[in-house]
Figure 1: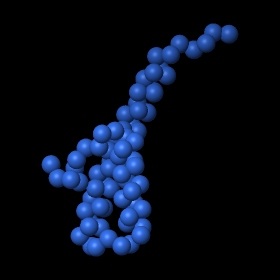
Figure 2: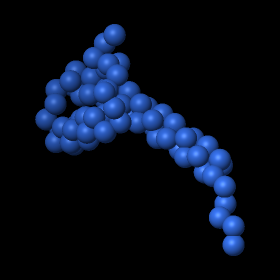
Figure 3: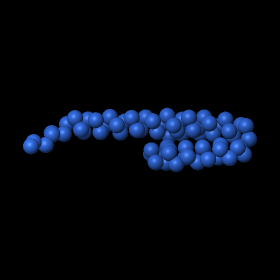
Figure 4: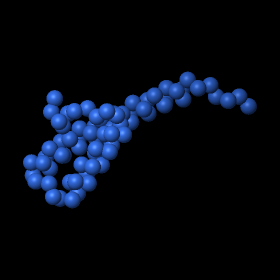
Amino acid sequence: MSKQEKKPENFESALAELESIVAKMEEGQLPLAESLDAYKRGAFLLQYCQAALKDAEQQIEILEGSRVPDEK
């Protein structure tokens, strides 16, 4: 497994790493090869975060669907 594909510990660490990558790339100081590696890692992390959010959203929908509405 390459560094670009190393799974983060959790959503929060993935998001923090992604934010760090974006900041470094915005500075414009990375050599081309490092920029490409950072882009690949960032794309992987973005996909990971999107999947984690989708999973959380599905869990919320299940929980809300199983909740009994309040009677008035």
